[in-house]
Length: 397
Image (tube, one colour):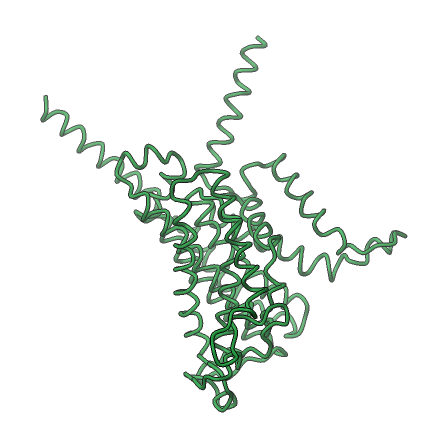
């Protein structure tokens, strides 16, 4: 009897492994489509002028894609509601202020920077080194934020993460009161840290704000790297552990999923992606100020993955592109004067929050699984609706 049970268990494990292998196998058309989209993304800047509003909006949209992919790891994969994601954007942006400007004027450290910057006071690291510093800082911060939430669930996690986001905002505003010695402070508060170093790469040179194509290719490369990591994580053992915790934490822990390590990894990896995007946006804006890190930023990024589809990588990409283009291109540039053309005395930018609220309600009513949902979530929602409809039909008959 024991041998029969062992044989059945072995067969079941083999079937599960075979099923997972088939699920992870990417069809040829999907690879062809991905290759075509990457090719289009590479040549896209050649169809628009370097100083056009569309190019600027596209650069910001790709940065938000990286943000959305990071938050999707925490909320979509692991099921941990995070309302303080703006904290990692702030830490990433301040990494540029600390390690890519003359803010710490008593220091004279220069590593792989251009000749024009090598004589300036302060700490000046190469852009890639600043990315590495931001990854370390934000991953540690993500684990610190995750530690108090290990025994919490649902709304309580949201309250704690919201508190951490507000704490980072208060520290950024009042950082002028935190003295580090020699007249230097932690932040510059609402005055901001201006004149941040522009990215520099040996053999390529320094970037400038009048030519946006290098900025586009830089954030496009970062986005592809983050996208590749997301795809690998989703199909990895860690990704399956996140999904197991999201579906049923008690059952996952009872089956041997390490709760503490798995949750902390989700917070750390999600924070890392947010910090990388914060580094890029800080350098692109050329200034870092405390008033940039408002609570509404976290809600904006969360809305991207909700509209796209929770847990869906491609849904996060689609939601981030859609809402970013609406917020940074369609409303301010294309449709802003539409109310005046209709004889109304207001601009469309005054209704931006109302527009996003309407879009969220529309998606939740018409397509609650999101515009590009994950297969598992789509089956959960649509199957439940279909079952309820079948029961109603049977009851009526």
